Image 1 (tube, helix red, strand yellow):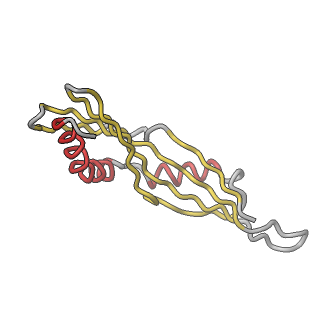
Image 2 (cartoon, rainbow, N blue to C red):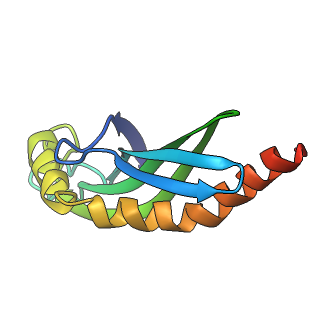
Image 3 (tube, rainbow, N blue to C red):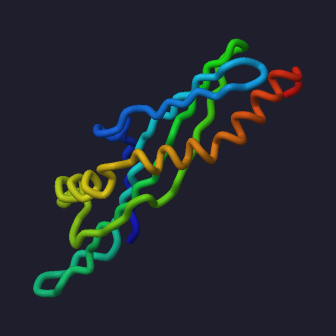
Length: 140
């Protein structure tokens, strides 16, 4: 039996938005990248009948979501970025019974997300510049 439970967290508490300024021919752009965590839990196995061992296991995975908001004289450019499986693990037993332990595991595994957020922002640079070029030429 597989049961998928999903939770969406706002932003890791230790993280503040990553901000960059881009000097573009159309004018300066201030971009902000806000991280969020998408946490998925999957319940695997079955509870064993009396006297038999259980095969229950809770598998979890964390994906990093980053919301980009770039302010420009012509308006705002928004985009969602994603990096899958930045952390993963499992615990024996029910997901609901392991909620506190899994929360601690996730907090430990995602303590410092700054590098991952900056890497996604760096990958977005070319896309953002292309969007700005389209604004500058009036094409969509």
